[in-house]
Image (cartoon, rainbow over all chains, first blue to last red; front, side):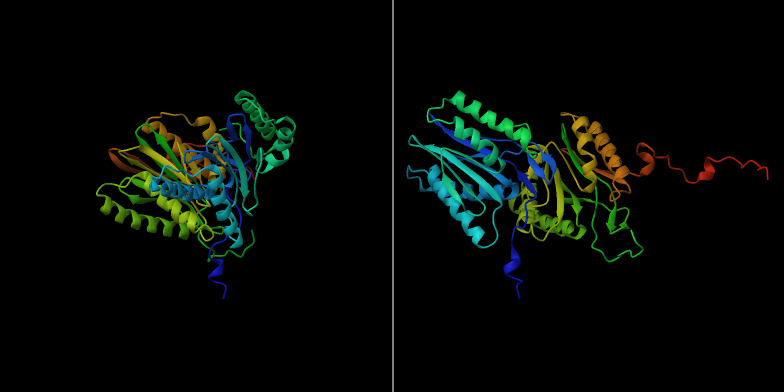
Length: 195
Length: 233
């Protein structure tokens, strides 16, 4: 009876990426993630790029199942392509891309077939900084600093304490490095190679 | 293990598969054991399958799943080659494998290593593990036997090896995995792909190095035993 409805459901992730951390700073957005792809408890791949540029204005960082992230990249490549084809001088900014991703993630969740990722989308358009996040159940919001996975528990308290609106590039990088170091200490699936 | 051997269990390949790039091409290697539960259904299987003249794939996991994926990819690549008018690139082959693996992730249980040579990018290795992730790597290992090789490759892998060094590495690695993984065994098969073409090699147990606690193979113990000495009874 149920032969059609069971056609596709991601039950559990196989190759996963660990946390992504991102902050707004004086001139824009800073984002960091390590380059590990874990296969269960094995740290199997150590050169996985989990931060990718989207169009001219945005950066997407993903944690969770890498194959689903690769599929999301394909959707976004198509989205950006169609946007460029309009050739109307306008280009999709981070807010628009974030909204698109939210719709995709939430609709997949409603069909009980989620893309097993937590995403961080940040960017700058016309001087306006934007930083948002969306996860596999469709929860999305924007904030001055976001993190996924264990980063929420380990990195955000540090950011809450030490973030301010006027971080310079160096201060921002140092802050993110501090977060990534804590994650390396305390997150078993972290590797010591970061983007 | 109890006495009820299930001879009708799905054929799984246990397996050790390896793909390594060297300066000029790639070397693919695999063991040859296919097991159904505890019984070895085929002790001389060929797990390195051709997709095109210049691209091969190492199969692991469920034998049926990996065979059907290879068959589909070979079919699509054949058509693609005709349309394109020239040999397909390794990247296209690997991405076709990924497409099938990702879109059927709930049904398939197979990890694949795609390796080959094309005139644009030279030798390339792509890993496509469970779930359908695609990862290009200078070397890839897969299958149940690969667990025993992570440390070995971390130490022994070097960039810019020659063809012979690369093949030696692959042979050594597969034979190490066979030594420790019950689901891997039989012979070591290698396939070398470069601009000149494809070379298949076959190494039975007596041509492989001996590891800790292993003995050299003989046709019979009689070859090394002398005449028995009379006993004092």
